[in-house]
Image (tube, rainbow, N blue to C red):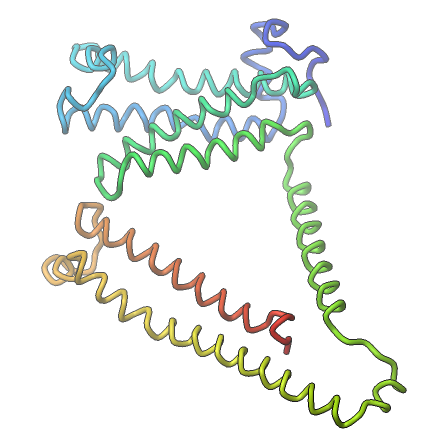
Length: 293
């Protein structure tokens, strides 16, 4: 881990550090560049919504006045570039203060970034009208906040090698816990104990194994039934949403309008739900407490 300064407050940063420190760490630099287009997206769709819905769309009187003036493109540039400057200074501030995480304010920074990303998502979703704009923007903001807050809480740098080691550690730990649980639930005995097993004990084990196999077969049948039912549900969903009528008139191409766009989103969510349910029942049939293969 490398740090830039021993001091940890915003007041101890110089102007040069504020505008250049973010570029010294590769992952912070990539994060800043990844978030930079958010300002342009928000500005573009704010202008598009203003032209499509009129001045009543914008609640901020300053933004409304700027968009109604002949110099609206000046506001556009300021709105787009200001987020880049903010995220750039936020990256520098994080690198400057991460050695003293108790006294920094990275949570506030994460919240401001999430608010701007959520606002951009709200404008984009509202322009295309494919989903609830407020709910979509809120979900995107929450996800962004969780990711940013976890990144800005780190005292070490992020790297692809470190991510692979972390993932391998999590996977090995999960695998080891499963093996330990299986070992605890399995009756162990040496060869002499197996030979001394009575016929009554054998008769007790056979119904238990049969019950486990019955549960396996039931879970697999449920998974197969869901797989067979899924295309019929998607056809009904297309009829309910109007996508089938759209396809008959305009062909199979999907356009982001109120009919085909919303039907595509609903169909995608339905497929994800059915796939997750099928995977759940297949994995359930392999669980140790139900009897493993």
